[in-house]
Length: 260
Figure 1 (cartoon, rainbow, N blue to C red):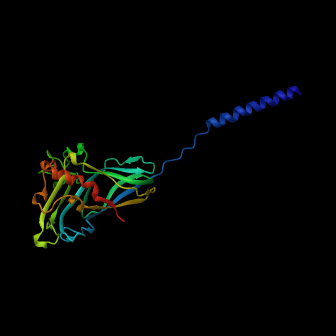
Figure 2: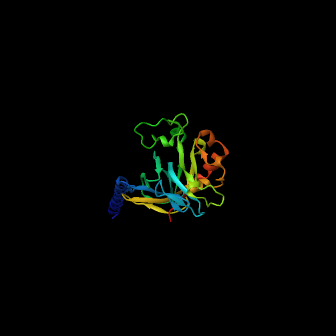
Figure 3: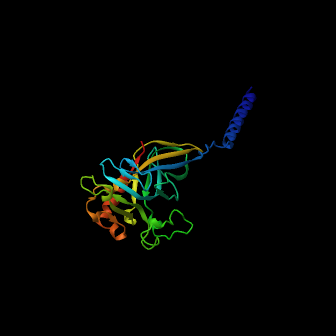
């Protein structure tokens, strides 16, 4: 009887080690990451409550002030997607030149998941701003976005906003009375970050997701006395460093809101 007990104990011990040995050889279950989705920005060009349909239409703002936009474009770079826990995903290497006539801008392939906001820069990084664009680079090789005849040595224009506007104090001037304005905002000092408010969105695997926003160029006039002629032109790096340049550049983050 004692011999039988010893045999049973040995069998149980051998079975225990055999089972544990099998467990160690079993590979861990790894959940594969979700496939990426495609993120696009859908960006409207507005002046106040009026969308800019083209470069020949005179728009009337809510203040009844008339404005004709002949150029409205800017650079967006340094795009970050804000996750639900507040951490961010940096979208690598994307620079967008947003023009009035081009509303859909590709951010690119990004990790699928839930996000609550987006951040980006208006302008270009110091490294890009000091580089000579390649001839084949259609995004940076844009003379309208240079301060001089080339991108060097002055660097790039980050925001180019031009046209004519009613400068009368009462905002009741005629079209013939409208005065030209031209704002070219740039230099490394005027690189501005935009942090959009919380508005949840989901990037699904192998699907396209849009973030819809409005760019209100009228915000650049905040605090600017339009009936002072010297406040209507700001086209050089020297002017960018002045009081007017600082005021206009500080208005850049105010330009962006979600499309409702």
